[in-house]
Structure formats: structure tokens, C-alpha cells
Length: 281
Image (cartoon, rainbow, N blue to C red; front, side, top):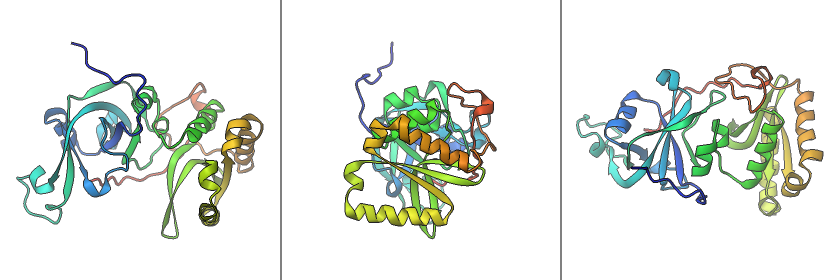
């Protein structure tokens, strides 16, 4: 009997949640007991999902650093950790509340969704369409149509960037739309929606953010909605390429997987960023 699949017309944001698995015991529960847990206080803003896909960390050998499996969500209910693991001795986390997500059988994706680099991945809300089409983790992000458009052009030009890259500066954390790491510096590329960024309060926040990133060695490029939609080839892409060239070219080290997007492996720009901690308990 054929398994039901979402309609191709379904584009609901957050219908798929990419979550992390960094423990073989948790993966065994997914396969045998068909459930996953998320602390209620750290659940993503787009919740609940219809599907869950699983990013496997370095302990999984040949399947590591990739999304290989997904499952249909059957039910979600709140429980305490004590209810999840009744055999565990009392501990400080016993009373913590979780979403217990009951799932169907694990299904293998037609192709793994690879992580180009070492990076922290916890939750990525995305769409079914993106999950099925993605070749790498960066293809999954679903923040805005402007970012999607810029991402498509960066890939076409073989400019390797990391989407939604988190940076800490002076106790503050910033999510960069696109991060490019170069021999002599770092580039933050932002896709600015006109309505949001024309607000004076938001403009002030952007100014402070730009200054903080500059102190940390980032070169910030901001492109407006009009520029991305109407001046991509004439202005946006040349600005990115010239900045990368001025900073000595993109760094090529610490590669996890070859993801060529039509280029040879030698043409790929890579980054080594080790963040081994994955605490979603």
C-alpha cells in the first residue's frame, strides 16, 4: 500500500521540523519506540510540525553530519522527564517538561542532506518541498523569499556561504543571513525586506548590529528588496564577489562533504568551525 505524501501544493511554513539526534540510544527509540522529545521551553517558534526529520551528529559514522531520515508526526503531548524515563533516579531535570512527539516509522530520504561544514544545528523549521529537494543543510532554511532568491544566485555563482550563521559579540548573539569566510576577513550578507528595515527603530538596531559585527572583524553587505529583485546581476553579485576577492578569497579548509552545485570539489569554498556540543535535553 502506497504511503500518503503531502500535496505538492503544500507550502506551509514549519510543516517539517529538522531536529538533532546526537545519541545512539535516542536513535534507537526513534526506530523501535517511535518517539522524540523536545523541551517545551526551547521548542522552535514554528510548532507543531507535521513531519520531523533528523540531523545525525559525528557519532553516527557514515551517516554523520547529515539528515538521512524523516517520519510523520502522529501525536504531540506534554510530559515531564520523569514520565519519559521512569526508571531514571531523581535528578534536577526530572520535573522539566517536554513535548513527546509520537512518530510513524522512519523513512529514508532519497539522498542525504549534507552539512558542508562543522556548525551547530538544533532545529530548522522548513517545508516539505525544501526537505525533498535539499542537497545540503543550507537549502533547508525558510526565512524569507528574498533570502531564497539570493541563496539561489550565490549557489549559481559558486559562492559558498552559510545561512543563518550565529555570531556572538560582547554577550549579544546575531543571526547572519549569509556568512562567507575569507582568507583575510569575514563577510556578512544581509537581505533586507523594505518594510521591516525602513522602520526607524529597526534601522537603529541595524546600525548597532553593523557596528558590533565590524568590531568583530565582519564586513557587512546589505541589499534591499529592490536591489535583490531588480539589480542582482548588476550590483548584488559583483559587490559580493569583489568583497571576497579583496579579502583574499574564501577559506578552503575543514570540509565535511563535497557539495559542488555544478562545480568541481576544488572550486568549493569551505570553513572549519568546530562546535561539538549539542545539548537539547
